Structure formats: structure tokens, C-alpha cells
Image (cartoon, rainbow, N blue to C red; front, side, top):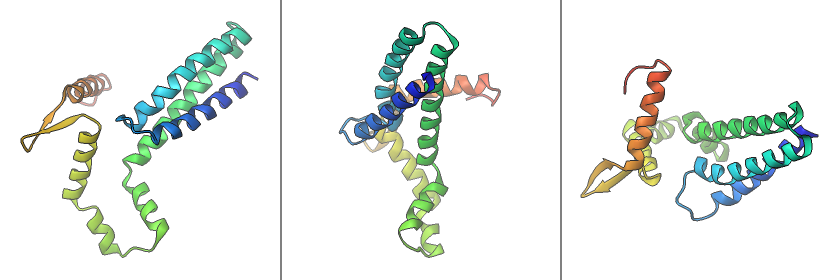
Length: 156
């Protein structure tokens, strides 16, 4: 019963995320999911503890919901930046010549695509034709640098 409750709440979170993705908010897909997923998770935690108490079953529902949310976010963030996934999406509609595919992933265009994502998500700003890192970008840089050092992947 507890696991079923977590699955139902997770399905509702995905539905609301789909609606949030269609709204004009200036948030990336992860933040839009967190906007709906966290309140639903808190509601699930309250309901689960109310229904099952401080038992393994009660905590299992909460942990399972958190696992499903993490897997979901990992999946769509992986696909968002995956060259292979993008190529498959392009190829599902129609056959494309190999040379045309190679031109799609010209290194300069790939850099431009990533820069556009950073601009659209508020990590960079364009001032007088030059790119600058925003406060939000600096915060993310500090967080990622800290995590890189923590996990032994070198210095920033």
C-alpha cells in the first residue's frame, strides 16, 4: 500500500511537470520538476507518516518516491544533453544523409548550443556583446567545484 501511494504521487508529479513545462515560466526543466515534486513529496511524507506512522512502511513510501524522482530527473537531464538522443530524435522523422548529420554537430555549433542554454537558464548574460557569468552561474560554479574536489576529480 505504501509503495502504491508513492507511485500514484510520482505519477501526479510527472503530470504536473508536463503542465509546468508548457507554462511561460523562465525556469529550466529540473527547477520546474522541483517546483511540483517537492510539495508533492512533502505531502506524501505527511500522508505516509499519518497513515503508517514511523514504521518501515511509512519511510519506504517516502524513500521510494525520492528514488523515482531522482531517476526521472536523471533521465530527462541525460537526454537533454545527449548527442545520441538528439540524433535519434532527428532520425526518427526521416532519413538524413551522414554529411548533413555531421554538419549538425559542428564543434562551433555545439559550443553555441551550450552557450545558448547557459544564457537561457540565466547562468550567463550578454553585456555589450560579451558573455559574463551571472551570480547564479557563479553559485553553480562554486557548488560544482566543491563537488568535484569532494569526489576527487581535481580542482576547479
